[in-house]
Length: 488
Image (cartoon, rainbow, N blue to C red; front, side, top):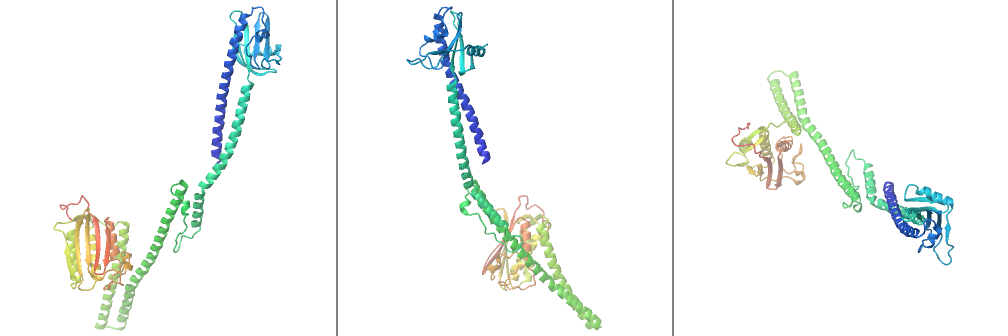
C-alpha cells in the first residue's frame, strides 16, 4: 500500500509541476500580449510629441483605458521619466505616480541588452517589461505590467492542487487499505487452513486431511480465490496420497506377514524332517533307518523346492518392478496360446478346455518366456479356482493396435470383496473359489507385472458363471510375420 501511495503521489507532483508550468507560460503569454498592445499605443503617442518635449506623465495622460499597475518610462531629449497608474482613471483617481530614480535605474539595468525582461522593482514587486523605440523621435519607451496576478493565480492553483492531492491521497489510502483487506481475506483463510493442516500429525497412522478453504473464499474467478481453490485441490491430492500411503503400508505389512507365513511352513518342515532323519540315523541301523531317512530327505527336498519357488517369484517381481527382467524379441502370440493350452490340458483333464485363435500368426514385440508365463498363470488360476467340469476358453484376437488375450471360465466367479485386491501380492480368493493347491498367491501379481512391463494392461470381469481375464498388449508397427521368433 505504501508503494502505491508513493507512486500516486509522485504522479500527482509531476502533474502539478507540469500544470503549473503550462499555466504560468500561458499567463505570461497573455501578459506579454497586453504589454505589446500598450507598447504599440504608447510608441505611437511618443511619435506625436516633439523630440525635445513630452515626459512619461504627458504621454500617460493621453493613453486610452490604462490598466491598473501600468508602468510607462520614457527616455528622450528631455530626459528619463517614468510613471505608474495605481488605479484605473476615474473621477476619484489620484492619477499616476512618478517613478523614483532608483526604480528607473532598476528598470534600466533589467532591460540592459534586451527588449523584454522580468524585473523586480523596489516598492512595486515583479514586473514584466518591454522596451520599444519611437522611429520618428528616437525616444525609448518602456512599458510594463505587474506579475502579481499571475503569481496569485499560480499560488491559488498550487494551493488547490496541494489540498486536492492530500485529500485524494488520504482517500486513496483508506480505499486501498479497505480494498486490500477485503481482497486478501481469502489469503488469510488460506494461511489459516495451511496452519491447521501443518499442525496435524501426518507422518504415521491413518491420516485424513479434512481442513479446506471455505467455498466462499475459494472463488476461482479471482486471483486470491484461485489460490484457495488450488490449495483445496492440493489438499485433495495430498489426502489421496496419504490414503494410498496408508494402504501401501497395510499391504506391505500384510505382504511381510504372508511371506513370513509362506516361508515358515517349508522351513519348519525342513527342520522337522532334518531332526527326524538325524534321530533315525542315531537310533536305528539297517533298512528301516535308510527308508525313514529317504522319506525325510524327499520331504525336505519338496519343501525346499516350494520355498525356492516362493523366493524366485519374489525375486522376479522385484526385478519386474525395476524393469530389468524382460528381454524383448518377436513373439507369435497365437503359437504361445496353443502351447500354453497344451501344457495346461493334462493338469486338469476333468475340465473342458477350448481355444480360439486367428488363422494367421499374431506377432508382437515382447519377452516370449514371460508371456508364456502369463498364459500359464492365467490358465492355472482358472483351473485351480473352478470345480471339475468347468469350461475354460482361451481366445486370442487383434483389436485395433492391441493384441488381446482372454481367459474365460463359467465357474462360480470372484467375490466382489476381493476383486480390488486380486492382483496384489499374496492375494487370496478362498472365500469364493475352492483353493486346491499350495500356491503362493503371487501368480496374478506376476501376470500384472509382466503385462505392464510390455506396456499393456490386464482387467477382470466376473459374475457367477462368467469370469474373464483380459490382457491387452500393444502391437508394434516394426513387428512383422517375416521376423523370426525369439523363442516360445
